[in-house]
Structures are given as C-alpha cells and as structure tokens.
Amino acid sequence: MRIVLFSVLLLVSQAALANENYIKKPSPYSVNETLDRLTNVLKKKGITIFARVDHAAGAAKVGKKLRPTALLIFGNPKLGTPLMQSSQLIGLDLPLKALAYEDDKGKVWLAYQMPDYLKAKYAIADRDPVFAKITGALGKLTDAALKP
Image (cartoon, rainbow, N blue to C red; front, side, top):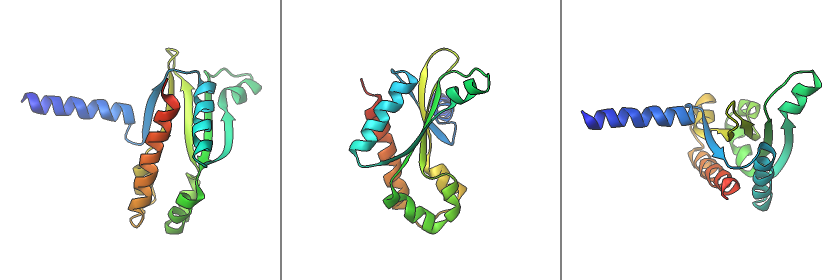
C-alpha cells in the first residue's frame, strides 16, 4: 500500500511540475538574466536565436500590468526541417520557444514545451531519434543556463 501511495504522489508531483505538456524549471536569476544566459548557451552551441518577446513590455504599452514575462524563440533547422518534412503543421510550434516568467510569489521560472507533446500533437511517428535529440538537448541547454 505504501508503494502505491508513494507512486501516486510521485506521479502527481511530476505532473504538476511538467503539467503534461511542458517542463518548468526554477531559475535563480531574473527573467531577463535567465533569457540572457539561455541565449548565450544556445549561441555557443550554434543554435539560431530568431526573436525575443517581452510580454510585460507589450502589456505596458497598452496600459496593462504583467509580471516580468519574456519569450525566447530559437531553433536548429537541421533538426526542425525533418520534423516539418513529416508534418508541415508542426511549423505552428517551431521554432522552439522558452518562456521565462516571474510568478505571483516573485519566483522566476523557465518553461518549454515537451518535444513528446509536439510529437503526439502532430502525430509524427517516423522521427523518434530527432525528438530524442531535441529532448536531451533542451534539458542540457536549459540546465546549463540555470546553473549558478
């Protein structure tokens, strides 16, 4: 019974952290510094930075308040193109994105969609090695950006 309870608690906590569709990691840095650090890590690996969107600044332009929230759009056409060859509709979610935001308690988070979610969403069954490579890379790259 204890094993079952422990397993259920573990699954619930993992689901809360990943919310089934995305990974959310705590950052010891501000929103801007988090994305600056991620940008530097990505550039060192030769990954293209397409854009950075400051959602809080956009909200301020229309007289609204939003806690610090910014999006980084990045990718590697060597990995993204094969996915689009399998389903061009995945282009709605590519290039990849990472969101840094400050929650209502002042904690900063870095979040990104799980590649397996995109695989299922677009029913791509012929690119498992590509999805595995993207999953591993996202984990390592975001961890590198967040380490002290």
